[in-house]
Image (cartoon, rainbow, N blue to C red; front, side, top):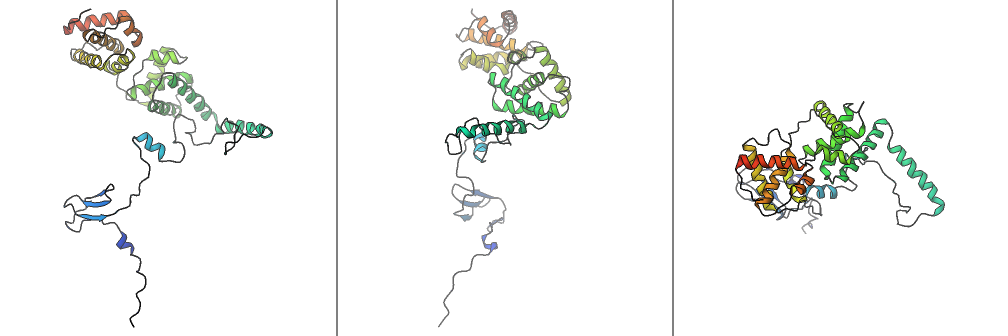
Length: 318
């Protein structure tokens, strides 16, 4: 009698290997289509493999930040915390992992643990400096409603200043404010020195002096701000329509071509262009309203307004 066939032998690793070259045309340009579960040759269209298993995650992410949050088990590292968020922290709630309240007799022990945990997170003078500075940075950024990327960039600039020993002889608050100002310019979220000075405890001149020193020492290549950078924010605060914003950008483009913006403050030129555009589009705003939003005087707006309307021959009905 013929011997019974045993169970089939498992395939060898060579049989399981994913092909790297098309057997039909010899091309190595292969594309994995995970929606259809196929491996397809880009040259001749031959399907080399089908029913592929997607090794990716089961969750979906609709932007890079959401994907970074879901791709890890814990919180992502951040430069806005002195230890980059890698150390643990005992929460302020007196509850155990199951959500039950901790007995009163054990709360004194938990208080001591929490106190010592705060102490050991800051081990030397550099970390103590970073802890204070980054807390101040977060306070100013929160008061100014700055986005997350601006805070991360400002923290990176401040850490570079610490590594280059630029803090010695200068106030921590001044270097923090200068780092935030440089970060706003680098991330195209323009804020004036007056706005940062109003939220910090440092004067405008000291912030500007520290900023110039840091850009020279750290070799930060930052382009000067343009009047166009302020149009969107000023129009939003004045509750103007998109038509006014588009018109203001067109006016600024013509003014830049005629070199009317050189040597002028960008906020004043931007405010004057918005004022002219609001008059032309029938969304009138007074010079005082525009001046308060832009942080300039009414006289500045009137001077820029006269220059732009006369040199560009713009029809304006007051």
